[in-house]
View (cartoon, helix red, strand yellow):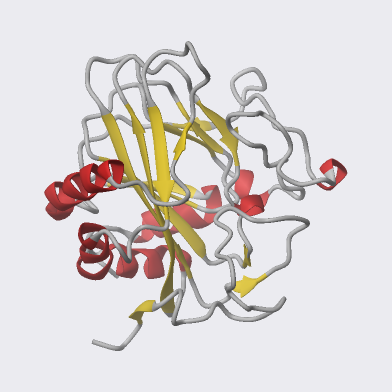
Length: 267
């Protein structure tokens, strides 16, 4: 396995759906920071501002830019993330799903709502992983994940962050968004240095605190899938939508759009 992780990390990821990987992107912090600045100066079609008028600070996010932001492409191809992902997922090969940046400027008190990523996506399968890596020191203001929530029998209702409305029409197919603090759930949260990464399953319930510090909180996320990833139909447009993908239910993800970046036993 990759020297950045241990068998205990793998066991923790499989059991809890979340684990901290120290230094995963430590050699790529400058590149990611440069890519974030390039992305914010030239947003893609999915860029969003996630605050209502009058709310302080700025909460910017954007995704699916790795093919046009050279720094993100470099990190995906040169960092150890794909090999670490294969070990944590128990997969023989790893495909890119997408990248995502989230920036909360100082004085942004709004938290990222509790949610699972999986219901927004058109991909199904147990072997999946998201890495959330801050590019700034995080102390008591980072990502929060509910351990074991990736094993819940029913997915959590996906909602639009700004409008707070249901993402799909059939709300009965989902459980209501819980309040993990009020319900005493096992919430995992870490102080982090730039380049550290939280690894979590697409089914893991997570959110993030607001940024009331005097420094920026720039985060880079990388979403990857393993051997069992299959296209699945959802009851409405997914996020990301990937228009024109042409896949049918049960298909493996097309490799020209979602390239294989690691294969076990292949140099």
